[in-house]
Length: 132
Length: 127
Image 1 (cartoon, one colour):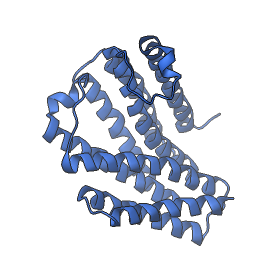
Image 2 (cartoon, each protein chain N blue to C red):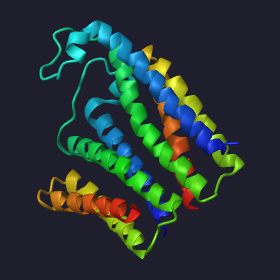
Image 3 (cartoon, rainbow over the protein chains, first blue to last red):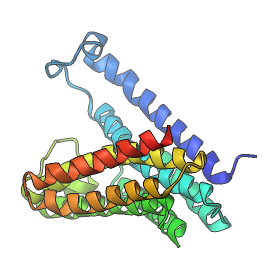
Image 4 (cartoon, each protein chain N blue to C red):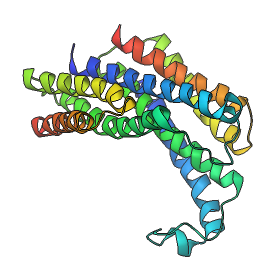
């Protein structure tokens, strides 16, 4: 059985993969694969739709969140500090990051920001739990 | 402090940088813009822009520092030398943030270089 924090970390990485695909497919259709496969030396001549651009920003944001969560999960695991509390925080992180993608795509506000704060908050709590 | 507690502390430093960036954005762009979908691009300036660039740099550094520490811990290759390198990295990155925020040239580059070299040292010690 994989430790729960690491299970969540793998699932969170898969959320990132899904977000990338959800962004890359419409971005290629809208900008044209001629542009996306080029060296991108110039700005694209065609514009992305608002929704696609939002998915791109959601993906960028997830990178930050994923690196921070990855550190929290791996430090807790390698130092044998996993508890029911840290496991719960990890699952809340995953739920928040899954919800974040459609919340951004559909322009939910302030829902998107609240969801981001939840993901941020549980990561802080996990890092603090790892230290004390 | 061990290498892992230094890593967790650095994670908290990056999160503090994110909070500072959000606070600067609230001042310059308004909370309304921050919670919106940000469909129109708005940019910050001055200290907030420097904190934004410091954050981007800190995330790159984090993505490099974290694997080095975790490899050392998992392989059980931590030593006084790896602890020292991790401590040097953390101190350099703590100094980096205010130095960049205040726009102090040269010192920022020097501090960045120290953090970069400390990370490289960790990888060399892991091999």
